[in-house]
Amino acid sequence: MPITLDTFDGTTHVSIDGELTIYTVAELAATLLPHVGAAPRLALDLSQITEIDGAGVQWLAVIRREAASSGTTVSLAAQSQAVAQTLQLCGDAIF
Image (tube, rainbow, N blue to C red):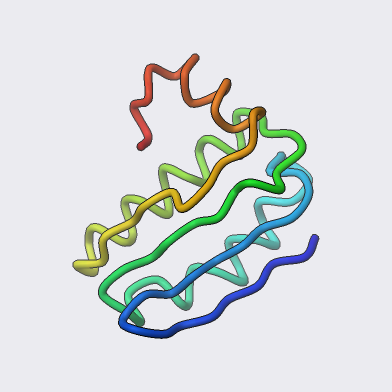
């Protein structure tokens, strides 16, 4: 699963390409969690997510919780239709 991380102007920009599912969240967590808190802001670009399941939603909640505990603000820079529909079903409780 391709993931890119770039930090500039006080924001860590994360772009994820592919699935955000039970099969990929462990790899994503291992890659991203060490960077949470490294900058005051974290911007997630989920525009290339093709599929998201319950594990993906939980991963987003963990990222948000960990960011909040370190004083980092999290935002969605972009989201795919799959992500938008899933977050809408969750009542936008995650973001």
